[in-house]
Length: 273
Image (cartoon, rainbow, N blue to C red):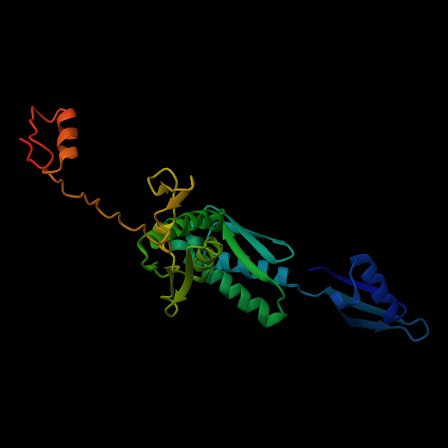
């Protein structure tokens, strides 16, 4: 934080000169009169100190905490529109990250408490070490999609192991646009976990081309076997043949002509041999 002392003939003049030199506004500083002297030619010494911002408080607390923990690493902070991003690097960064980022999450939570106690924080504070969160996000996103396919194919819920809020948020985001499954958080902290639930329509019920799932219809098009609303075609009735009258003269003659054997007819009303 910037700090300066200015002596002028009045408090207003000293404050204006200090603000110009610090390149700050009056809302960004705290000013107090340190010394006054002179009866005829009055002199006022004003001490102007820049107010602590969320960015300053956060980085000071984190670096102090790292030093108290005896770790060989340092933190840097940058401000963006949505949040303050803190990047930790150094020899002992892995120790600060902890198992699946549990130590990193604790440091982040404590930083939020300290900053909010001093000023009203209007942005999030996200602490990362050696791009751990980015790598963890990629791993969890891949896992979420794999388990979503399993849930959709089997039609059964898939429960994940307990996760911290950061990891649960990654799972929810990865499957937010998936039309075959939905995600819900269940349980209580610190054992809160995510359940991937399939939608009513099963993933395996989707029609696929090229796998024998389409049959050619009478109109030249294709009808899917998955179309359960279609009415099955009626079964064809077996063709009934009329019994042959072996005593009929015309049938006897035709049977002889078609090669039915050597037959001899003895008149119209006679039986054929």
